[in-house]
Amino acid sequence: MMGPLEPLWAGLATAGFATMFNLRSRDVPLAAAGGALGWAVAAPLQAATGSQATAYCAAAVVIGIWAELLAAIQKRPASVYIACGIIPLVPGGGMYYTMLEYVRGNSWNGLATAFSTLQAAGAIAVGLAVSGAASRLLSLRKIGRRIRGSPRGGRTIR
Image 1 (spheres, rainbow, N blue to C red):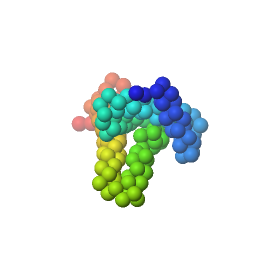
Image 2 (tube, helix red, strand yellow; image 1 turned 180 degrees about the vertical axis):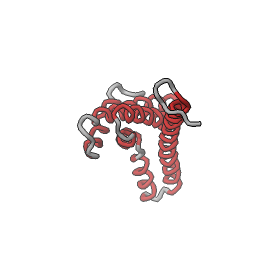
Image 3 (cartoon, rainbow, N blue to C red; image 1 turned 30 degrees about the vertical axis):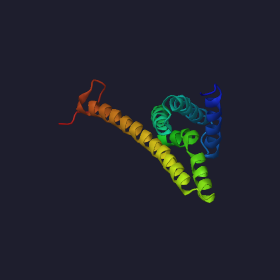
Image 4 (cartoon, helix red, strand yellow; image 1 turned 90 degrees about the horizontal axis):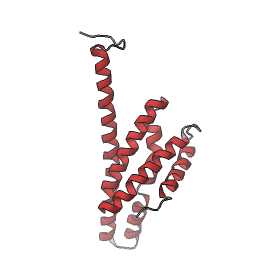
């Protein structure tokens, strides 16, 4: 079960990385909100489904959509917000425990942990790809309407 402060801690961690990545001061709270939002989606979903990969994929989609919206509003690249927003989801603990199992000589446990970690990382990548593709499709539709001739002064190509 997710504690009420978990999204806050995820947001603060994200703000720390946003500062480390030299984001503008006005972009830091927006990036932090993305990290908090992603964790607020991932933690309860993981508790409900028992699947870290499913939870991380859904959270990455939410973070990607958040980043694309901010990019359009703030006139900044979406990657600025994505790189910071996914920090709470990065399976660093899984990488550590994989290495620890191998160092202890537990190859099978290390392999299982490595597989779980790779699933989580792949789920994050898939979630970001889905949100990016959806954003591009919606942008192409808007551009297509403008090119076909819209009442807002778009040019018509024949």
